Length: 336
Image (tube, rainbow, N blue to C red):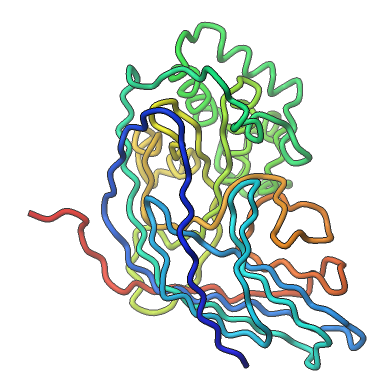
C-alpha cells in the first residue's frame, strides 16, 4: 500500500461589496477517519475510479494533517463550478476483489455566529451574473408552478430583500414537518415537499432553495458530515450526513441557515437564521454536481458522504464506507 500525504492550498472565496464580519464561537477539535470500500470487483475490470468528498478549510473550519492510504496515487481535484474538492484514486488492472482507501485528518470546527441586522442587509442589484448558477433550475431543482405560487404569495407585501429571505425561511419552518416515515423522503424532491410537507434535512432545504430561486434570491444547499449532536466522543463513533443551506445576503455574503435543525429543536429558530452549531464538518455545496475529474455517469444530486465509484466508466454501487470520528478536546473560543 502507498501512503500519501496531501496538503490542499486554501481557496479564497471572493465576495463583492463590503461584507459584515462574522464571529467564530465554540471550537470542536476532531479526529476523522474515512475508509471507502469497493467490493466484488469484476475479474475483467480494467479501471476502477474512486471519488471521495474532500473537506476544505474556510472561515468556520480548519482541516489539516491529511493522510491517505491507497493502492494507487491519490490526488486532490478542484471543480470550478461550485468550488468543491474531491480525492481521486484511479486503479488500473486491479488484482484484488476489494479495494480500500483510508483518509485520516484532523479538523477544528467552530460555531458560526452571524448576528444579522436587517437594516444592514442591502439589495441584490448590479451585475449578478456570478450568481447565475444559483438562480437556475436543474434536473434536481425544479421550480414548478407550486413553487412559483408560494414565492409569489410570500413576496406580495415584502419591501426589502431581508424581508423576502426571512419570509421564505419562516414558510419552510412553519409548513414542513421533520418526518422520515413518509415514503420518498431524503431526495430533495421539491414537488413532494410542496404536497406532502414532510421530509428530512435535504427536503427542507431543497424547498427553501427552490422558492428562493423563484423569488430571484441566490441560495445553495450545503453538504456536511453530521456529528452526534451535543455529545463528546472520546472514542471513535459513527458519522452521518446532513444538508443545510446558504443564502446570499448583500453586505453579509453567503449566510448559513439550518431550518431542519431548528425544527428538531437543536437550537432556536432565531439562532439557525445565520448561525450554526459545530457538530458538523462541511464537505461541499450545490446540486447537480459534476465531480473532478468529471464522472462518466450523470451528475449527482448533492456532494454525498458516500464514495462514488466507476468501473470502466460505468457507475458502480457495490461500495461501502466506514466513517468515524472522535473528539480530541473541546475548549471555548474566547476565555477571560
